[in-house]
Length: 173
Ligand code: S3P
Image (cartoon, rainbow, N blue to C red; front, side):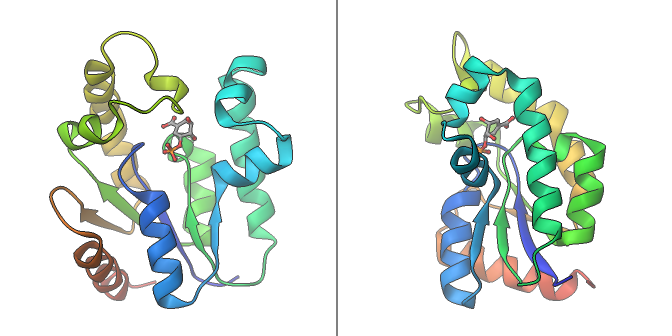
């Protein structure tokens, strides 16, 4: 098993865009669990939530990690914001490589996602309140799953990428 670089964190923290930049910079191919699931199902994440339910999506996430466990190449892996909530998934992530938590404040997330329609969990009233309470709940879980933490608020991509690479060196994996 190669020491993959895994990006975790709340929706809108930059996992996908930073994953792409990191993948390009380090010349390591990129995997994205949401994209893998969408391709396999032939549906968007929103459609899966609507037609099959969140529970079915959570099962798909664990199956996706197990599939990646069988890959022999090293990857940058961006995972869905809710994936580390399940203990089984956190254990699989630790086995898969170095886990970087991209930590963002609720205000940062709200500013980035206020016009986004692709996140089923943020639909409806009071998205800001939802973001605040979910981050309060999930923050400690992300910390538990992480080998290192990088704060992303008010920083440009280049700075964050530099901090990720620095943090990985110190992560001891
Ligand atoms: C979710 C995050 C989403 C996606 C799904 C559920 C979550 O991924 O997996 O909408 O529970 O936080 P991103 O973090 O890439 O937006």
